[in-house]
Amino acid sequence: MIPARYSATRFPGKLMKDLNGKPVITRTYEATVNTNLFDDVIVVTDSDIIYDEISKIGGHVMMSQKEHECGSDRIAEAVEDLDIDIVINVQGDEPFTEVESLKKLIQVFKEDKEQHVDLASLMVHITDWDEIKNPNTVKVIVDQNNFALYFSRSPIPYPRDETISVNYYKHKGVYAFRKQAILDFYKLPMLSLEASEKIECIRYLEYGKRIKMVETNVQGVEIDTPEDLERAKKLWK
Image (cartoon, rainbow, N blue to C red; front, side, top):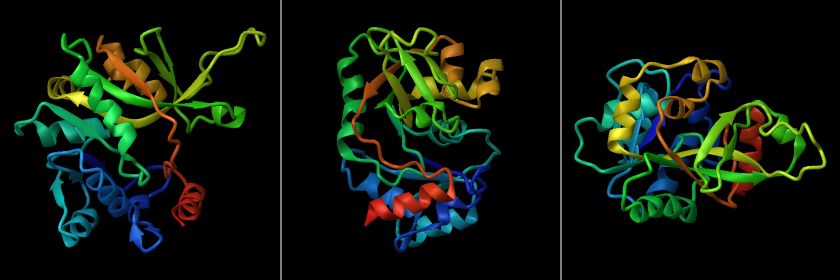
């Protein structure tokens, strides 16, 4: 599922911006389909413009029936009546989604025989301090089994003792859910930590869900700003 909201706060209309001949959302949809990992790939949108664009290329697209605060809510509404077990959420502004990272997420659930994992997500090791400090970069810290402890826009862990060597990880907004986990998310109200940080996956932690983080080396480009779009154009070439 690819949630696709037209009126993004930081970069309105970004999903329909041109990325070397095609809109960003089209590039993302085609890249996801081309992984050949999924029974179906569906764009879920609140926008007639995006709906028409995906329909025009013969893609599978659904229109949200309600207003939603975040992509997970949009997906939950869409999958409620579908006969599925695992849902992968690919962000509409990530046209460089690639096969190996998604395979790793799917493998988490194949290996989770006891069903201890409610959802899985990706993280990338980062070392650039400007990126670590950047509030647009969501950081994650994990326990020894790579279960998420917390997500933040602040640098976590804070380097109180600079002689201690720690790794910093950037959260990539690609999720894999058990269907029940995302339906639970949809029904549970937002609490203060999620509201403060504006990071939707914190809601799962606040309600005791377990998020297995999977490290990937693929950085890609998330298109949050016009500058990101220019970087994406260069990378695409």
